[in-house]
Image (tube, rainbow over all chains, first blue to last red; front, top):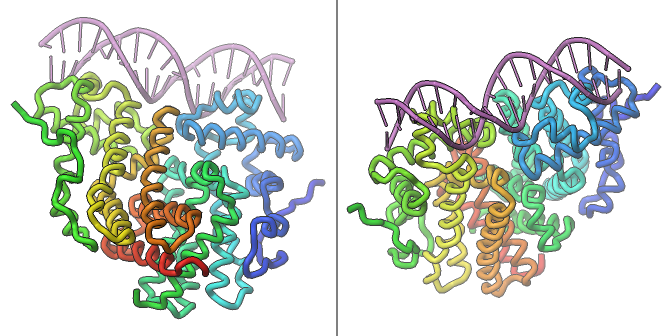
Length: 246
Length: 246
DNA sequence: GTCTATACAACGATAGAC
DNA sequence: GTCTATCGTTGTATAGAC
């Protein structure tokens, strides 16, 4: 009866964003946000989740993931115990195991969602003709998604070592694919040598990831996500503007 | 009989580095490197370490820390057990506790060393008159130290959440002090507004920390530490060169 | 200074009642 | 669909021999 909302989910089919855009515009147009993401998780893990009543499942999934983020954020995922998780969610140990197969698989579910978003969200900007403008879209897209889904991104970044070797390699490959896409756009500007483009693409990854990695810092300094994104874009555009020699 | 080698350790008294310098020059002139750091650790923790014979202590300290880095790197500090550590070092549980007070304090010892280096190493470049040149020195200093002591920096960055709340705040304060120093130098260039200087200083932190945080990426791509440092410096100088408006 | 042996708490996971 | 009760394992840390 409940129809899936994200069948073969892709960004290409959604209303495009303008070249330069702020967080408010992003939030209004994104097909995936911090409210309907539980449905996205549910649909990606049907079969693994024992609970069949969708509304109950979504409710408890939200409780479980939110509690996991809070606990992992403060003491780390490995230090967090399933008994902690039960206390915070109100579920029992047996009840919890209706939603997760194991503690490790809980981490893998989170990783999967964010990796999927990171890898396909750049489609949303592929219609922009100028490569540097398209790059700006990708950078803003990443920053704004990590703002909207901050606990998810933070978890994935800091807890990916808790995964097994195979899934860690999947995570590394995903980061390299995103970076390669940025490098390609930088190369297409015609302003950078190939080596410089790859290095600058790596710097771009470091810059945008800093928003969720050091959230405490920017919150303390009262810096908005728009100010941060503007600043990152300015740094990257300045470097490209050099056109080769220093 | 064994005299301390780092009494009241500071960088100010050591031979200064030129404005622009590579990793080789850094390595030749640094008073603290990956070989004598065990002595540095020993001297900072005298009183806590039960073993009094210095040569034995240095030997086992190296074994313990190297094994900790390897284990924390692969499975995470929290997942690493003291039995793992015994197996890797060849020590017994009882023997191990002659060097550490607890598992948590082992992490705190590592944190302490790197925080101390990060906070005082900028003294090494305070003789440079031009603020932008001095900034370049600080950036290169951080990158080259994190290259020399890569496992230490990597551990501190990713495992700081394993510490208790008080020590986590100490770590955050340390990062903010380093960043504030960079912001001051950027402001002194006269090319940036105060807000822009602080944001760019934060970007600097993200850029230089990427060298130890994503070491696997740069190793795979066969990028040298000198190429990386040059690229970071180029990005920052380009942004400053904009002189305000975009 | 290092070892073996052990104490004791806490963990992830499951079985079976409701 | 969720609970309580419990299993076997593994963790940190220590005591006492050598």
